Length: 180
Image 1 (tube, one colour):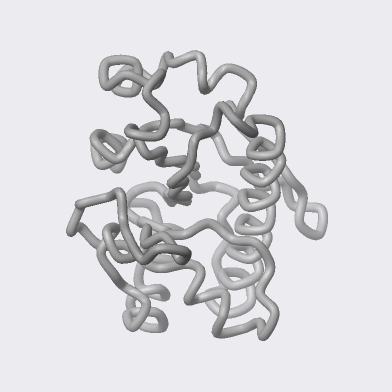
Image 2 (cartoon, helix red, strand yellow):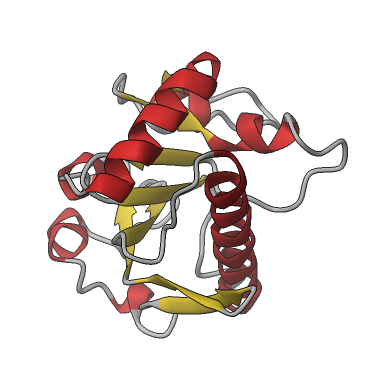
C-alpha cells in the first residue's frame, strides 16, 4: 500500500467509521426499501459522508471501498436498456462529482492527493432487471452493456488531473470479485 492510500485509509477510519455499512444496506432502494445486493461485506457509505458537509448534497456514488485502490461504487436497481443515454449522463455526473468531492475532502483534511492512486468505478446492476448481462459476460466484463457506457474518465480539480483508470459494469453476483 503506497503512502497516499495509507493516509487516506487512516483518515477515513478516524473520521468516517460511523458511515461504515454493509453493501446490502448501502444499496437499499429508497423507493421500496429493498436491496438487490445480499453482500454483508462493508464499505463507507459515501452518500452519508457527503451529507455531513452539504444540506443539499450534490450527486455522489453510493459507496467507497478502500484497499490498495479507491473503489467508487454505484448501485443501480433498474434496467439500463430502457434509458441508457440518460443513465450514461447520470453515471458520469456522479463519477465526476464524487471525484471532486473526494479530492476536496482528502486535500483539505488529510493532506494527501488522489492523483497518484488508482481509482476504479464499479457500477453494480441488478441482474434480474438486466437479463442481457449474463453471469459469464459480467464475470469477463465484455457485455455489450459496457460498450460506450463508460470505460475511463478524467476531470480536473484546480488544475490537478484526476483520472478514474477503470470503469467496470458488473452485477450483484460478481462485484465483490473486482474489489481486489
